[in-house]
Amino acid sequence: MPDSWAELPPTAGLPPRCADLWPFGAHVPLLPPGIAEDAALLLCSGTAALVVALQTLQRCSARREVVVPAYTCPLVALAVAHCGLRLRLCDLAEDSLDFDAAALAEVCGADTLAVVVTHLGGRVADLATARRVADAAGAALIEDAAQAWGGRHGDAPLGLIGDIGFFSLAVGKGITVYEGGLLVARDASLRAALRAQAASTAPPRLGWELRRSAELLAYHALYRPLGLRLAYGWPHRRARRRGDWIAAVGDDFDARIPLHGVGAWRRRVGERAARRWPAYAQALREQALRRLPVLQALPGVKVFVDRAGDSGAWPFLWLRLPDMAIRDAVLEACASLRLGVTRLYVHALPDYAYLQTVVGTAVDVPRARSLAACSLTLTNSLWCDDAAFARVREILQRVLSR
Ligand SMILES: Cc1ncc(COP(=O)(O)O)c(C=O)c1O
Image (cartoon, rainbow, N blue to C red; front, side):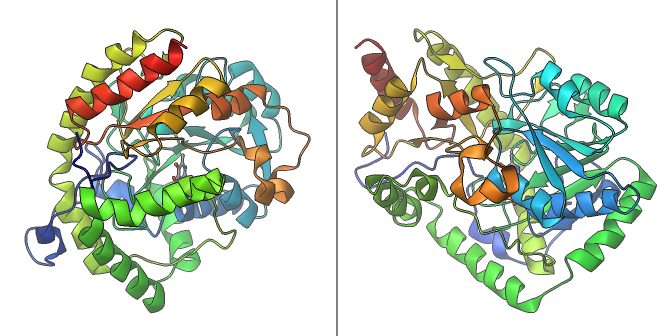
């Protein structure tokens, strides 16, 4: 159990070490396992990576629409809008985090520039279906692997199965350089085009680099069970008490997307942390696989897992509860315990007031809305020991049996 002051993080970020800040030493590439150095490009965020990907595709196509899941990070919608493209939402399949295949085929057409297939919560999406539908429409396939660093589909690393893929290196996402993104592509000529686009879209900017470097230092100082209470727990609970879940989970994004480079020192910090990633990812996976059956045994609870042969990342465990009242009662019962129980994105994309001009209002996406209303996440941080996990399970059991 966390001690009386400690706070568990909502996701399993790789705990930083002071030694990561040392700028010298052997070069280790900042890459997910299985991806070669020349396949990847470091950018200032996952969102910036998506902007660069879309702008690159726009250069050789007059198509105007980008298809994204109706439940995903609002930054994805803002990136599409930033590029002057039209967002087309696709609802999720029943009881799934993935596109509904029939709905996907329906929304894709002659104007579809790209389909953004998304490994939400680290779970591996159905890439074969997305590929088939994107190919049939003549659209590019972009893999949003923001939350799936190091995941695999069979033997293939996530990110390289689509035409373009991207990962996030933001806070809480495993390895971090405070804000960062990795853009990857298999095809060498596409990579050259992405590189050229990135140089003009996101050039080095000293002011941003100084700001992000200071934020990364603060992150190193505070990413520990006590510091997290100050940096995450207090603001999170204050926002919840105001009834402002959007602020509580950090869904309140600015439409102005920072676009700049990543300096050598931050890259080096990420590279040093990346050396610890394989062992850490394995420990997360083992912990998740041990805990999944315990959660699956709870009546009426759906736990999202990977299909056989796929192996995603495990930043948190994602549960769907029988209804919103039960979900909210569990969140309420966990509220003051600092056990890393929270929600992912608060709404389906059409339900964020600030996205109204981007999404439009008359979009019917009932399954995305239902997932937003009934799901919650449990941290998979290694700081969540068996006693803390047992406490969460007891709360779930108690609320479910009412
Ligand atoms: C699914 C998904 N896509 C894209 C992004 C954007 O990544 P970043 O925060 O690095 O800009 C995020 C961030 O949380 C995400 O979860």
